[in-house]
Amino acid sequence: MSETIKNYVNICIKKGNQILLLDRQHDDFKGWIQPGGKVDFPESFFQAAVREVKEETGLTVRNLQLKGISGFTNPIGKERHVYYDFLCEDFEGEILTTSPEGTPKWWSIDQLDQLEMQEDIRSRLPLYWRKGSFERIHYWDEENRCVYHTEESLYD
Image (cartoon, rainbow, N blue to C red; front, side, top):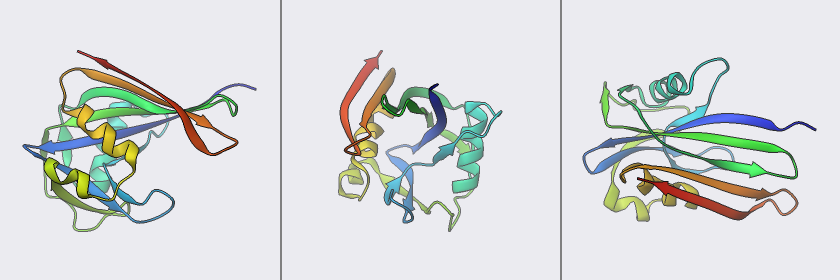
């Protein structure tokens, strides 16, 4: 059985001490999330990030910084979900009032601990605005449907 790899992008849009998040209220991943989604073959990862931000927020992003790689690896199922994590501090346009992925809203970084969001997102967000890059991989236990190990590396 060969390995299956699925590619995604996550984009942290930062304006001073605020970041733009979406209030996602559908499927099993409810809560505040950053813009992002699947990379459509054969588009590049940067093209996917630009497209996803435009679709989900209405903003046009420039000067994306690739900050890290994160994801989930399922050794038993031989599948890997790879997330290319971008920081964007250069953009133009007005945010949408509604979006299929969730209503976009600016939040102060100081308020993030008060928001309903997945713990993986909450703990990953500060990695975007630190100096350097990161790699963060969760290993998935297929039988128990949970993460059994996480490896994180920070690079300056």
